[in-house]
Image (tube, rainbow, N blue to C red; front, side):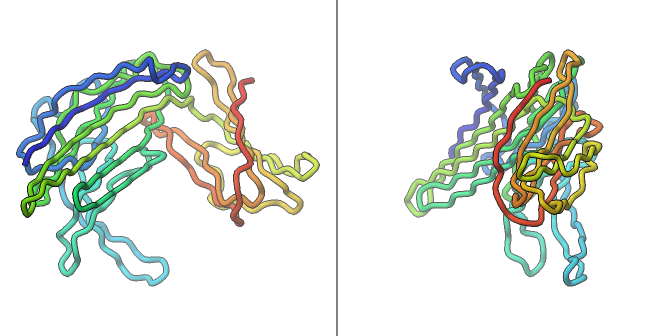
Length: 308
């Protein structure tokens, strides 16, 4: 088996064109040839968590949940990196449950927004694509994100290898972004034919000003306010029903920019929209989505970004 693995790092300011992107590639040491790139484990810190070791082993654990409809206990398997706080984003193959076929599982948490997964299996080529975004508030202190590649061995075990990391220090424009891409290409000879497996994982780290207040207005067809309710970020109801006569919703997110000036983002939804999302900040400075369901399906009218 032959393989080629590279890392690409790209930093882009929100107002710059992609032609101004600076791209760097470097070889990535990954271990035996049969180890497959399956995703990333993102850690934050001034130095790599792997300074004392060249890899971090994952532990396979069984998680039990209760099916709300049947009341039965359901078991699922997941790989966990113990003793190393981070953000998982990888898709291992699970084969350990007795009586079950192997399957590909998604390991992630709410720090990954706008996730996208594409698995393609063909006669001559296979491809795996993972894309996800981490929204982080700006900080005056140095903050480094390590997008550590995750591999799975032929025996099913999983480990993470070290990454040098990219710094998010001094980036204080909302929408500014850094992208780190991990690519691997494997060439395998099967039955006299050459087959190519490719893997691409892209993690985007984007700046978002910290939400301070969420305001939801319900409006009638004459653009008059029926209700106006303030919520703490993360405390917006999980289910929201339209008021009688409501034609649309306005969802406002109130923030302050890097200079301390007020900034408001407004999104407009038809009363028949299926859902909307707001954000709140975790203790580690990562902004995560909070979903709210609306009783009827519909469409988003549009959104605007206003500073005031």
